Length: 507
Ligand code: B12
Ligand code: SF4
Image 1 (cartoon, rainbow, N blue to C red):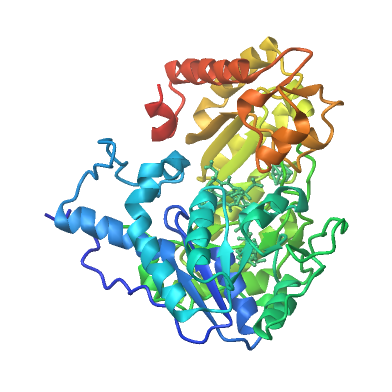
Image 2 (image 1 turned 60 degrees about the vertical axis):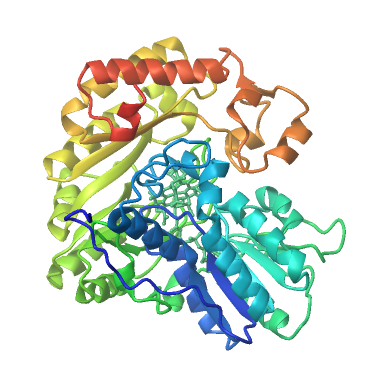
């Protein structure tokens, strides 16, 4: 029997590919929550501007509703997978993405993907673009191979989260014909127009391909500068009513800026230059979603307060327009985040801010290159919380140079902030990401690999497995990083710090 909260039955669209397409744009599962596919929406806008014949197909949202409607209406709950283990009730929960890395889970969803494959084989679009991320990457490889066996002439283009840098995108050319590096506004129009004319362009700026001249220099991403020129995604390919979870919750996704104004955190590979949209245009976008019945708005900005005056102005605009919204986003700890600033944000509707505090002692903050100190962390979290905005805080543990004293200080400082933290969102060991300052300056940070470095990078171009690297002075390897995370989590739980359900369930 259906649960009371369920939105089913729902009119779920069929999987259909149009005839005579120059380009088919696909979102394969998973994208979590499920959110409006923000990047895909921007790519859809880019394609609209080219005049080619294209279709955007969000396979993820169709799989999501097919799965949950079956689970709730037919009573297929829990789903028992081929090896007799139970699939998690909500495989789209972003707090634990491991489900999609299990072969049995992919097998379970494969019949839906097979429908898309058969449609593509039948309708033969000239090229297919896939938004690749760390959780759908392997599904996409399998998907491409299955199509190539029947129709080898279709060209595949990758873009999205997996393709931020030249370095970590090269390996995708084993499967794809072209990879668009980073944001696509400046590069995709030329590429898709040429492909529509049956050309196979090579050495395209901002794009890498199987057809490039051997030894070509790295393709540099070409991010657009004036973001106001590109409008905002409206997801016209589907009724936006479908973008809600099985209980009916939904939220709109917005970027008021792209990139980061700091760009110096040493573990981070998000190195895009900061650009912002004009506050009035962002407020107009929010108003658009409010008129469509959305009240909850998530900001996808990496650095929402990268220009704090623009954020302040945006909030003034929201207040002036009397938009009755609830806003959430990720905020960087900063000296400009005064109590008055947070009060203004709260007045506009901010009710939830995630702070990537990451380092919880002055020493670790310096090691991580965060650009602020613990005094500012205390002030930011306190003033945010006391302004009525929920505070989500995170930590990254086991960075090069971190000592046992730092671990003790981390615990003490978390406890000191206990009354100002609504939830500890993530507390995780450092991951070594290609493109990060740590990765690019291994000698400086005393990082070594267990095995041949070049081979490890070839095998794991997106992130280096935890057990294949360590740092020295003091010695920190995977075991120590995980032990530190476990120890800090355990002591904080004992002291009543609020952890997300997923983090708690691991203890
Ligand atoms: C906001 C954000 C979130 C939000 C919302 C994510 C969402 N699903 O929308 C939340 C907090 C929920 C989140 C969660 C996670 N995130 Co996050 N997040 C971001 C962030 C900061 C911004 C994403 C964004 O909206 N950018 C703006 C839009 C406009 O850009 P875009 O989507 O990239 O699209 C452009 C291009 O990529 C390209 N493009 C996109 N699709 C396609 C397709 C084709 C064919 C082409 C040609 C081009 C193309 O064109 C678009 C327009 O220019 C990025 C960092 C970043 N700067 O991108 C990390 C990032 C996406 N997150 C990341 C990770 C790892 C996660 C988590 C897995 C973390 C975790 N362990 O819990 C989860 C799960 C993410 C998921 N799959 O849904 C990684 C992804 C790495 C990867 N290879 O997949 C990133 C890149 C951070 C990083 N540098 O490591 N995240
Ligand atoms: S972690 Fe956040 S603040 Fe630091 S460089 Fe990356 S995006 Fe910028």
